[in-house]
Length: 204
Image 1 (tube, rainbow, N blue to C red):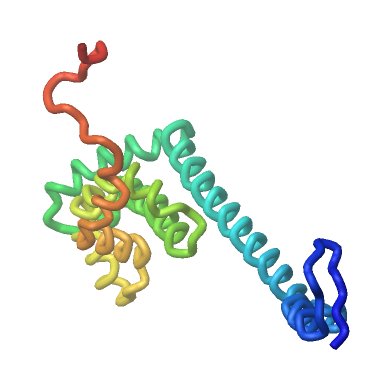
Image 2: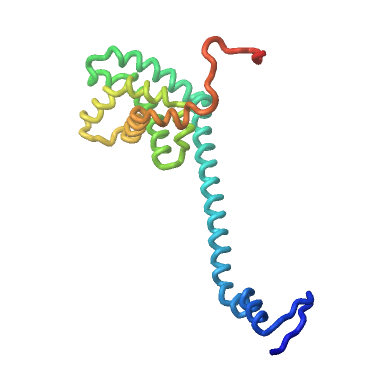
């Protein structure tokens, strides 16, 4: 049996050399598994690109929602439309003849602002607006608006024999009204606020 000394001074036999070669990968074996490594790298790159795209889409939805609310709060025409809507709602509360109300200017003021709410609901439904931003900012207003206009919307649906009127707005209202977990998930985040007057100095 032929024996030789390795560089470390350890005796190397054919048997130990075979074990040593078996523990390491040969060039041929590396060539065989190279495509697998290429696939892993490609999948990793795809995963990173997908995550980046989804993150960008989320940012775009949040930005679109904030831009929408900024416009409703700052645009002069929308502010005038809101004031007319509020005055028309006051008139609608005391209406007993909805057919007669539908012939008034107040009806058109209510319809105009309902179209704004429908637009927001369509944006959420089609993932253009971020629902969490809309929920936190306008949940109360959406519930109040539906309470104030439900009888008029139902009248319009019956009058025109069409269920499509303000469908997205109605669906959004029902979802927000019947899912209290949305408030726990989105609205009640962060530490609770203290009851009572707003503190103006840090606690000592």
